[in-house]
Length: 362
Image 1 (tube, rainbow, N blue to C red):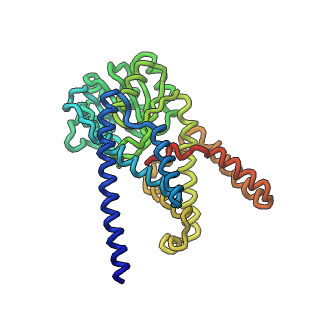
Image 2: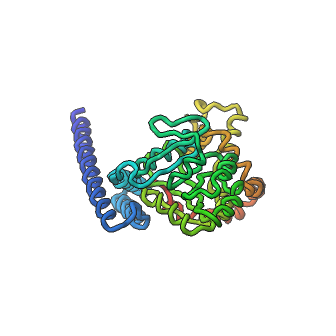
Image 3: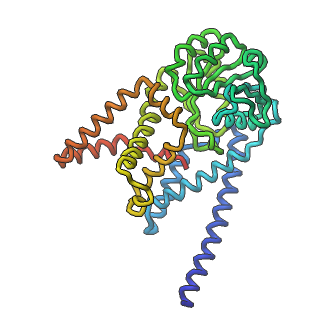
């Protein structure tokens, strides 16, 4: 036992050294963040991140360790570096950037936006039929308040956004929505953008998000170049990865990147529920794939049911995705009797998913 105790003490000492090394690495990342800001660079550089992941994976492999363990560790370290680089950004004084009206500001994403914009140095005012947001100025006069701010953000479900946008026609401010689906308001956004500053954005994160360095936000061009530029600038001040695309492409993209994974995870949960299976019974027998899928499915089923229903029901591309799911299940069933066809399909899937790790969030 003395020998085992000595080995454990050695491990404890090595753990302390690892913690110290990580702290040194984070401090170096903090200095790198300051230099990035001084030279006008964004927080994220995915090419450099990919090199770090590859380098550490190969380093583990050369030492006889699992390459994927080295890659996973690299992503953890990158994530911590991004967190401190984003957190060290000093916010301007309150109100120095201008005034923002958040419509629906007492809701989950509305309150997140209110805190986010306050942190960027904006004076935020909330309008919400549900009432005020604690600690934030509140108004019941939508039109009057919209005429006295620089930005109006519509943070309501797609079904409610149309009526709000109607009341914002002619407003002399940047108007933008954050709806998860755009087809219910697409024509309206494009028409308004002909006469005033109108853009559309889609933050691809939930209201519990604290750090944006691993998140994407879509900025959608409604036909007004100046409005699109202003919307981009708003989020480029953060550490989020800003992706610009035409408004007309949004819902088709979301059918695959949002609707499809939601549908798959809802069906996964439904199969378990129909089988009257309790996770307490299944978990101990679950392998890595089952447990990873369960983790994602659990996140999905704890979200707002009405919002997730609308994401499926209001997207005109949803029937095509559902048909593709039916076809995929039929094809899988057919290939079970044909080993070569199954092998060929798996090869095609690998080609399709090649490079996905580049977009894994640390």
